[in-house]
Length: 210
Image (tube, rainbow, N blue to C red; front, side, top):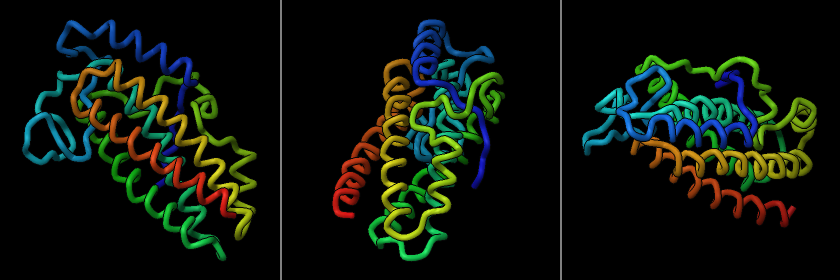
């Protein structure tokens, strides 16, 4: 999946989400600047979700910003993983990691996109933000290097770039954890922190062994 969207800087993200939490903390989030959260298919009830929470008003602008930023962030991770899986002579452990990242993040892109659409929120962030200013996003030149590399060199670049990429996602997820309103969005933010911190440790071990 190649979803091209425009992200924000980590500093701008933190400020925007903090302000959003203040602005929406006392209301029900019924304005167009608010949005419900994102769970791995769950809603605020125990019933399985079809992609939208029970109440389309149970969100704030921090939840909206979190989804709008995490979609392109995830999309790049999926693109990088796909790039690795098309290569030859990649260490099996690195290929397995790329497969795991794609399997986890691709469905979350669809989930968050569906939520934004159901909440009548834009799936893209406001214009004027550089796609490479978001924390952890890999620049065009580094992506070209990754695309051109093969074998162990490609594995090394992938691990280095994905570690930084995960670190950027964790910053955004932790901000949502404190500023978000919707329980599903906050839960997903915690899941992202837990999963990606573990993957960072795995990637560091793999990198040391190359």
